Every structure is written in structure tokens, then in C-alpha cells.
Length: 117
Image: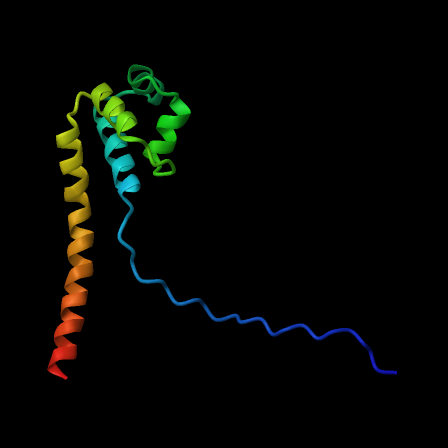
């Protein structure tokens, strides 16, 4: 008698192709910048969070890029770190610029090749 067990599909053991580099999210870069500012001041998470009026857990989530904080929360944390919103925004934008330039350079290059063809 033949077995009636279903056959299992073959497992693909080849390594997946790496995905193209994606532009970082605003919240990730913002969080990195806030953490950097806090470390420059030599402060613990709880100290900065207390001055900003947020919980240490929430500030940690902001710094890790997990939460998308409101403008009010960003202003509170920036104030606790003695940085203006303008300076913080410019720092985040400057951090994003290299990623954006790399992405647009590739698109421009592809467009140029397409026009040349």
C-alpha cells in the first residue's frame, strides 16, 4: 500500500538577496540625535525624561525610533536638552541629506542611461 502522507514543498536554501538600502525614517534619525544630545550632556534617560515631563520608557521609545512623537513631545524633549526646535530639525535634516542624495543620484543616473538608450 502506498503512503497517503502529503509531500512537503522543497525548502529554498539559497540566501535571500539583500534589499536595497532604504532612506531612514525621520523618527529614527530624530531619536538618534536626541540620544546623542543626551549622551553629550552625560545624562541618564530618567533625568532628561523628568525635565521633559515624559516617562523614561516613552523617551527610550522615542530615542529608539519606535514612537512617532507629537510636535509637543519633541519640543518638550528638545527643551529639556537645551536645544531649539530649529537646531534639532536642521540636525535631523542634515543627517537625512546624505541618504536622500544617494537615492536621487541613483535615480538621476538611471534616468540618464534611459535617455542615452
